[in-house]
Length: 138
Image (cartoon, rainbow, N blue to C red; front, top):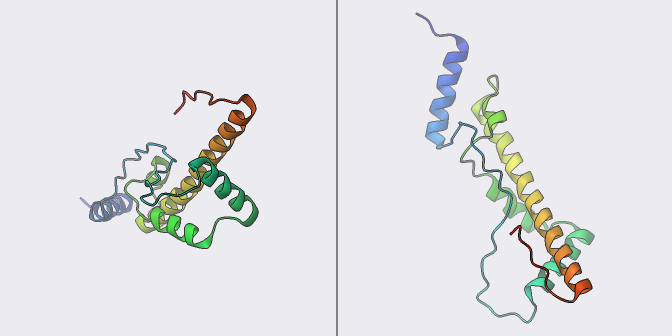
């Protein structure tokens, strides 16, 4: 019995995904945060001041090209596909991976924006109240 074209394509996509070690089950944790490596060189600026300076720089000048390039490189690693991308039957695996890479990059930027806004709000609240307000969501 001959296989349908969709079955052949699905088998090919499965083989490509296995070779690229990509999970195509559509499982996604939704994370968007980032980790900062601890600095080994002592610096006179506090972490709050560094984050505030960074946020102000990005607001005025935008994301530096070196940082954007590093984020693009980091987003190229695709370990799993989102379920909506994985379920596109007519898309090739290469196009699915390309779409997932773009989505990973956008999630990195959204995570940075969220972290910066939370930190900026926390600093403003501390300045207004005069003490550190407990943040239970962390």
